[in-house]
Every structure is written in C-alpha cells, then in structure tokens.
Length: 600
Image 1 (spheres, rainbow, N blue to C red):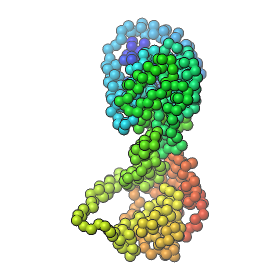
Image 2 (image 1 turned 180 degrees about the vertical axis):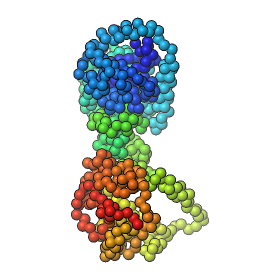
Image 3 (image 1 turned 30 degrees about the vertical axis):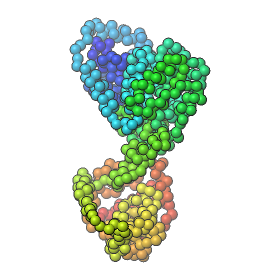
Image 4 (image 1 turned 120 degrees about the vertical axis):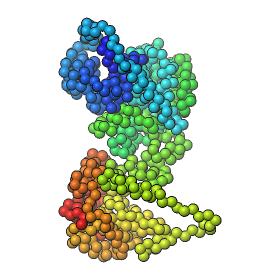
C-alpha cells in the first residue's frame, strides 16, 4: 500500500520491526521535531495519515507532540483507542490482517502502479547524513553509538532478534540500529520496567532457538536482573548481552538536564562486569574504543554461537543526545516520563582514571574542575534554576551593551615584564582608603543569597580571607550586620537612588549605624532597564518593573530543590542593615520600594 501511494512509513517504538528498515519508504520511529531527519522531512507536508495498530501513546508521539493531521484514518482492533489522544476523521475497528488487504484492494482499483517520486532518494540521503553526523561526533576515546550499531548490524542476519532494556540506549537503537525482519525488536512498554532485557533475551532464545538473539542494556538496568545470566548459562543459551557502560543513569540524567539545567541521583558506583560474567558463567568481552567495535562484536557473536551467554562491556559515549531525547524534552516540559524511569548511560565515569579525565570536561560532567570564568559560568547554568541564571547572566534589551563590555574586557591584556625579580611579588594597594591585598574588590550582586545559602555572608568571608573589600547590594539577601559579623570587617554598601527618599535615608542611617564607611552610589540607572530574560521568566513585567512575587521558573523549574535555600534565608527586600536573620518565608516577596517606586 505504501508503494502504491508513494507514502513514507514510520513506526512506533514497539513496532520498529513491523516494517523493514531496508525498505526505501521506511523513515524510522515517529515523525515531527523529535524524530530523525528522514522522518521529520518526509512527513513535513503530511495532510492525511493512516495509523494502523497504534494507541498514539506518549513515547512514539514524542510526548504527544507528533503533528497528526486532521485527516486521520485510525485502524485498530481495540475501538477504545479511537479519539483517546488524537481525534480520528475515520475510525476502522478490526484486525489489521483483515482490514489492510481490503484497503489495499481499493487502492489498487484506483492506482495500479507506483508513482515516480523523489521521496525514496530524499529519505536515503537524510538517513546517510544523520549517520554521518553521528559518526563524525568526537567520542573522546570511548565508543560512538553509531559505530557500535554499524558493527552489530553487520554481524546480524535479517531474522535476528534485538532486545532492548529501558534507557538512553533504547532510543539510540531506535535511531541508529536498522531492524530488518519481522518480530525482530523487543523492548519494554507502558511502565518501561528497568531490568527487562536479560529475562527478555532468555525468553526470546528459548522461543526461537534457531535465531540470533542479542540484548542491549544500560549499566543501570543491568543491576536489576543481571544475575539472571546464571539461568542463561545453566540452559546453555547462546545469547550476547551488550552493556552500555558509562556509570550513570543517562536517560534520567538527560531528562533532568534539559528542562532543569542540572541532574541529581544519577551517578552509579563502578560495576565489575568481568566479575559478574565470571560469577554467572558467561564469557566476557570488552569494547573500549571505536576501532574495537568490529572485532569485539564478531568475537561476542562467535562465542554466543558456541552455546554460551556472552557479557560485553561497551564503554559507550553518551555526550551526543538522540533527537528523541533532545527535542522531546526541550519542546514539551510535561514529558517527564524519561525522568521518572529509564536506565543506562550518561556522562558519568567507569574507572578511576576515566573519572579524573572526564571530571575536567565541563561540557560532559556536572561536577568538574573549573579552570576559567567560562567554566564557572557553565557550571552555574547547569546548577541554577533558569530565572536565577538569567538574572546574573543577562543584560538589558538585546544585550548589545553586555556583549560590548565582554569584548572590551577581552581586549585588556596583562603586560609581560621580563628580567625582573619575581621572587616576592607585592600586589598590595589601597582601595578607597581601605588596604587590600590586590587591586580587586567583590562587586555588589543582587540576591546573591539565592545562588548559595547565605551567599553574601559566604562571599564576605572569602573576601576577608583574600584581603579584598566586599560590597553588599541594595537587594542583597543577607543583612549588612550579618555580613559584617561573618567577615569581621566593614563591608562596602551599594545604594540605588530611589524616588522614595525616606527609604534611601533609612538605608543610609542603618548602614552608618552598622559601621559601613564606604558607599558605592549607583548613578547610571535613572530608568530601569528592560531585561527581557527576566520578563520571560516572570521576574519583571513587560514594562520592566518587578511584578512577580513568585517567578514562573521558580514555580516550574526546581521549586523542591531551591525552596529550602530560600527558606533558610529570608524575604527579598532592600538590604536593610538591621534585619533579623530569622527565616521568614520561602516565596520571594517584592520589597515595597520595588512595588511602589522606581529609580529616580
């Protein structure tokens, strides 16, 4: 029917083997932005869709982002699925093996020849380009998923059965592992139970002793049922189990990182796979790099052919996300299925040396050794809720001035001095009448107490230890009295000139009463800037005034993670130097002067 219509064909995850990947009209799993380019492009102008035996569930629709057209012809044996997630223009209740031949007969009556179309060539080109994109990705000494899938596919015949577990590897297989024959792909569905793969390959081999059976499992899901390899050994089952080993629950980690810019509780303790293989009576193979994929897979399949299970340690690289994970999570924040469930893979480490090497890579690990200001910025972007990161990272308007300031700083260079005595360098100086160990001071940062618990007090202690001045912002979280007590030194105080002159006078009197002898007077803010990032995050209204007592991103991003930090702080208000340190609330309330006044 697809050939007569000249129509592209996509499948669900469970239906990957329902249509051969070798067919020129096959495009992959699903269609839309979350699908591979071949599918997204082939279905780009779809105005009529024939859906056979699918419920349009969350995973194959990319969390219901699939752009199903109004002209939906839905065929299923279960009439309860009709109109459940997508309204059907025509609903056909019945078995596909009966209805499809009847539809095909009607199509043949209307069209007897396959129409000439550039579609198959375009699909082939898109598939080739996507594979090339993956193969060109720098896996930094680990195994590229595309290289592994190519090697495995070359060792399997068309009747082979591939069993997946639940995790990042599931979608890597869906995008990079072509399934050629019917009933050739099995994976968990609905509740997506971790630990499915090992029992799955045992059952598949017992039911199909004459077919090749391989499994792909993450190192997280393996911990659930890995000891079942004893059963495979005792039964003499020739199955190959490829473990995507990286030391992290990567599907969960990626699902956390995309909407929340951080991850938690995903790193796994190292697992001795060689010992597991020995304990369960399985053969053992290691694949550490791309150039070991072909020989490693071939050896594993040869050992499995001798009638024994084989455990293969694949040191996989997960630094490149699948289209499904990246596009699905970004476009649809309600899609938390993968964050609640899944296993295997991520940017974690496996061995001590690996952990040290990868810990120095900011782009591939959350906990890393920062070596530059840009490293700290990227760490902050990972850790902080979006509204806080944008507040500290952003500027006004289109941020042209911000970018120009950064360029100006980049043009400042330290002049090299040679043939000078540098045994005892002296950087001491005086800044506004205060002795300093170097010509540096910590500038005022609004709401620093939200970036870390008692943030201003911590910064003041660090400044005192380094021998440099610290300045407290008008909109600081900690009081000036607390900052003075924490550092043992008089802090500078930064002041905005507000229209409410009584408020200004009160701030000045309280600062003086607390021993502050240096005032930083901000004079370049006659009108509040239009900070568009803050507007988008609900921190400001479109006019640029503070208007949201509870930013949208506070509500939706990481309320549970950050509420305790704020609860241990206090209500946001003008930095009253005499506030009590007693916690008051976990919701950032607007200070009165921000509600009723603007800078003069």
